[in-house]
Amino acid sequence: MNKLLSLTVAAFAAVAATAQAPSCNGTAPAGSLTTLFGGGVYLGATSATVGFNQMFDLVSNADLTINQIDLHFYDNGAPATNPVLVGLTTAVEFWTCPTASAGNETNQAAWTLQGTGTVTIQANGTHSPAVFTPFQLPAGSYGAVVHVAPVFEPVSALNVGAHPLYTNPASTPGTATVYQDQYLTLTARGFQGTAWTGIPALRVWNGQIYYQPSANAGYTTAFGAGCYSRPQSFYEYQTGPGGGLSTTYDLSNTTLSLINLGNNYLVAPGGSTFIPPVSAALTTVGATLDDDITAPLALPFTFNYPGGSTTQVIASTNGHVFLGTSTATFGPYTFSAFFSDVPRLAAAWSDLDMTNQGSMHFDVDPSNQFVTISWVNAAEWDPNAGPGLGGNTFQIVMWANGNVDYVYQNVSVWNSPLVIGFGRGNGTADPGSVDISALGAFQSGDGRVPPVLGMNPRPVAGNTMNFITTGIDAATTIFGVYAISFGGSAGTSLSIYGMPGCSQYVSLPAVTTFAAVQPNGTMSTPLSIPNDPSYNGVNLFCQAAPLTPGLNLANVITSNGLCVHIGLQ
Image (tube, rainbow, N blue to C red; front, side, top):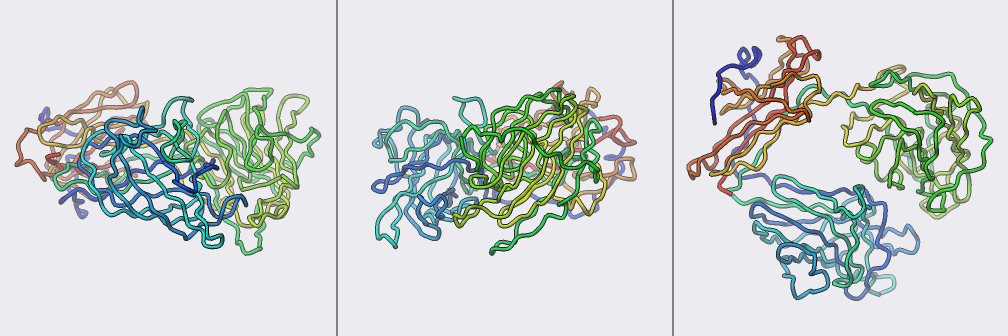
């Protein structure tokens, strides 16, 4: 590494590591690459004769041993047309072809069987583990297929096709969704309901690949947390008692007000009352009133919310409103979308079903000062194929000044999760559930995110890597500092140096170097490792410290720590 200056901020120069030091000694830990288990759509027609294929492209930059791949199924009797296969097993196979799957989709002769195993089917929303006899996947680029054989269903004594869940791409149509970690890059392709037949349409495979890197693989391990994390989202998450019982939500017959402060909300009990809707019941794009959404609804004003604005909303049958355009339709089973999809207002996000009971309405105030989105007598979906459970009546009032009221009459929860709050979406952090009624009045976060330190590519002898810091606050001056050491700290508080909530993760002495902060909120510095096998297994520790005024007295914030284990591959 290049030692530019032996100078760092005062806190790094003054604090010695006293906590137990982290370590990344030894071979790389086992890892996994996951897409998302959001579901949303299931493959309805699968072969009971040859089974189906789940296809994607895979690039590995190290030799890996794969021992398990988790899958996602919709075979627990809902909808009733699908068989109940939960707990049953069937054979799975992992196939590869050179470079990529394109052009080889229907030519099974171009593919090589790499591994076999058995999958145990679980209910939707949970992982179905396919345990393989461990097999090697050398570094390289591949087309990949997880083939699932038909399932023997003991009641009918017949083989049936299982039904995988997938998610429609959230990116631009025609653009494949990509997932990656420090070893693997997965590019989604799609499904063949009858194995080796037809060209798959682009879909997001719901899966998780578990692997063990080779003994000489270099790797990095992030530890600790940077300062400061203040997510704008807030929410309360609870689940129903099940067993034919229900719980009445404690905000029933009250109002919750979200007062827009610019970068965050002041959340407090409110005084608004329910305004009976006068509009006709809304229809949905899927022509159902179960797990569906409306067409965009035009607002008579620009509605500002923490982090953005919109002139239209989309109402979901499941008790929430998208603040913009979203392809999502499914309800409580995709809670992670609260932080990954477009922003949303969730008055009572649950698995509501108005097929037999209930309606949604959109009303505009004659003076264009507010709009109301109402759910009236909306039942919760009944997993036993009944007409619905209970009846929920509530309303979202969106004001022209950016304020929001959640006005509740009766809200009950039976089996489904219930989520109340504001989801900032767009890849923001999860602040954790709170008890809204117990807090009284509180403020959500202002959207601050800590700088995140990583490395790309992995640390391999003979290569040049880059320490890369992302998420640097826009107020940061033109540079920051990297501290690099042969020792690490589990976290020493820097509060006495005017940096409350920040921690030091490298031990002293440390080499320090300055780096310019780019307009996109990143900074980086290179690390060149000689092509010498004696570097195999050497550990380094690094931390970044952007000079950011206004967030603490020191005008410095810190990143997470990063342990770097140098390898030969």
